[in-house]
Image (cartoon, rainbow, N blue to C red; front, side, top):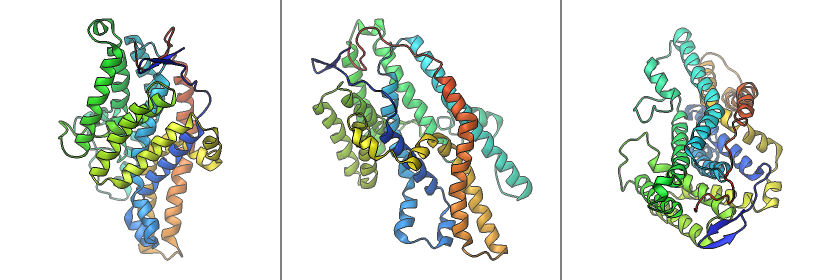
Length: 374
């Protein structure tokens, strides 16, 4: 089963087993986002040293790493598909079974906790309307300019857009009525190039996005992950990869996004070498990190609800009782509690739905298996 790389036929790398390096980075990214959502007021009460507090404050960059990893993983999952309209429907069904139950449970959890806060603690909270909740259920709250129920949900809307954009482009470019006019490989390359430039322009403020709920300003991160997979499996050349990575790096450095650039390049390199370096996978096969990677989706979904409430309770207690090192206890409890709660939800909801999603077979292309090409 061969692939085309600038006119040359090569044998693609087969992907087998788990990519431990990718799982490890996913776990680190999830924990970074958890730390970021520890309220600044609690961190100040702990008296955290400046350098450590700076790490917490930069935890939002875990999202940037997630988007790169997402591009890599989704490209890997669809690389050998037949890319028909039926395939698109099966892909959507499989992603829905995989993602929706945990996400919907996170929506319900946040609303329940908000109700308890309003009912018993007199918190100020504007409950979303049924239509607003329905917009969340369909991942459309950003596009419809609906206030996010939880701070982390906007990224899932972007993820869904990434998935549909990639698979939709593959399906349309390989449709018979399209292939009559332009080869699929050229069309995909053109679309990829245009989206990459537009995404960087939007992110850098050169172009304005028509809607803040669209993922235009983040497509370049997803594209980095896709290109890493294409190169690691010998589907694009080192020159093509260098151009893509170089354009992204120069554009982000030009915008002085130095830390973000470093983060996405680390994620990019991790994806590249996860398929080529057994040593890297062995090095990152650390049980606690792999555990976090395994539950990363649940941890990401539920942590904001847990961390925020635990921090609020800690600060409230601090005003009425004297407990030694209470802020530190509250910080540790909020983070550990988030991990434990995520594990419980992983076992109850995510793991069963993950197994169920795998029963939906996407199918494979007969003959050559190529993500790009005719």
